[in-house]
Image (cartoon, rainbow, N blue to C red; front, side, top):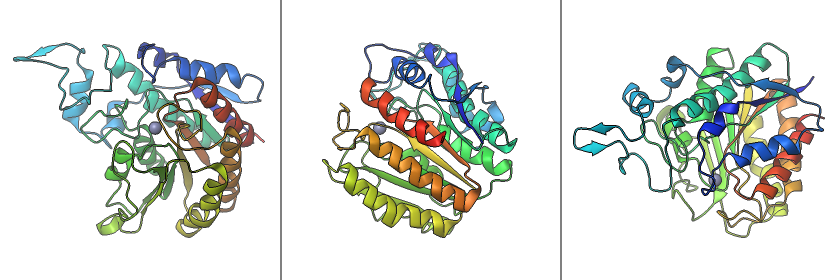
Length: 313
Ligand SMILES: [Zn+2]
């Protein structure tokens, strides 16, 4: 079985070359992986119904309007909705629909049995996006939209591992009271966005289905892989998912300018190898990576390359 790499040119519509979350990130990964045997697929666009499984109608409509439209006395650049570090252009909405769509395309191809695993080069990223708030460079929560879509395709129990250096506040909140989606995050603590303490474990029907593993600045590959074996793989084994998603941010790399963790690129290969084994045991190897952060281009491309090499073995 093969690995699908899902991509859309549309990500380039949302770009600010002076911002760490820029189009070069995905273009550099594409160049770096050209010698790996992958099924290259164009991402489809997510439709409104698919987005509304996670976000509100009001928020969808709001994002769909031009960036600087004047509403009453206010321009749309409302600081209550967009945190200061998140840029928005007239083309962001379109790019964000394709970004969410890239993960949906990955699910389609796996559901059809044409690939056993996949990597979606989703950009803009998603895990900080809340139901009604753009945040941390994110607009639609790609992985959450994908989890709901996967459930509609019969993959009822979804396990999400988020190994981005930052906590995926949006994903956690969306599934906090839901026992059908297990959200596990490793992230530097303390760091933006400030959520993700170890005692945040879910509520109601979701109690016990959120697992936060905050890491001290400086945590390295060896310690990370120990945690992977002791906590994360056993959480997957206990949950018995039908599919595994990975919020794959590579900003825990030691050279990343926005994070203070100390992983090397080989660590991402080993993480992927362990996840693959767990997925083979629990869900016929069904595993989908969706790109989140990673802001040192060289570290990002080398890390994604290690993960993709392992996925495609
Ligand atoms: Zn991040």
